[in-house]
Picture 1 (tube, rainbow, N blue to C red):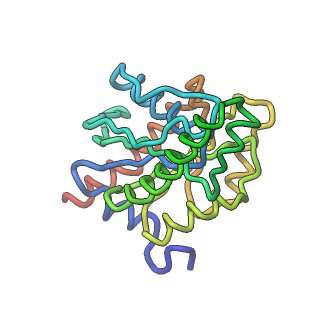
Picture 2 (picture 1 turned 180 degrees about the horizontal axis):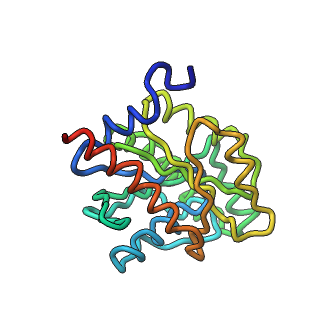
Picture 3 (picture 1 turned 90 degrees about the vertical axis):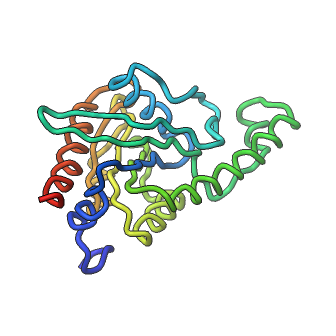
Length: 218
């Protein structure tokens, strides 16, 4: 029967994205490339960017969004607001910022505090989200506590999910592992950094969402 019970993925997409305007949340653990993906989408379609990126986890500690972003695929299009959310983590330890990234104690404690608040904010944003681009690092083991926790939360809310298997430009990338791990969701291999395969992501979004909107409007 699947994790959505009797409600199929397609019918959820139909119901949610039958709206003329959809709010899409970009979710995932820290440092998987959420803001890089948000920047890629905005750069490709509006010429803008969402925010700065860093190798230090939890660079995004408060949600950022852009309204009325339109992506197209031939004669079809999708209008959406994009929300770039703080990375979700089951544990934030200020000592990691000190020991791994060389931040001083006061800055580390402040960053950890803001990161924890950001995790809470990300969960709260789900109340107004219509669908999720879930970013995962395709070079890492997909069966992490954070990935399972995020997916469980999204599935409990019956939110449509597209998994962006990011960092396929890296040698250890294995998007096939993500597809095998989460077969209940569409998985699109991408490189948010280089833009590789982003056209496939865009066409999948438009084909999945705008088609359902048109069918609902008949």
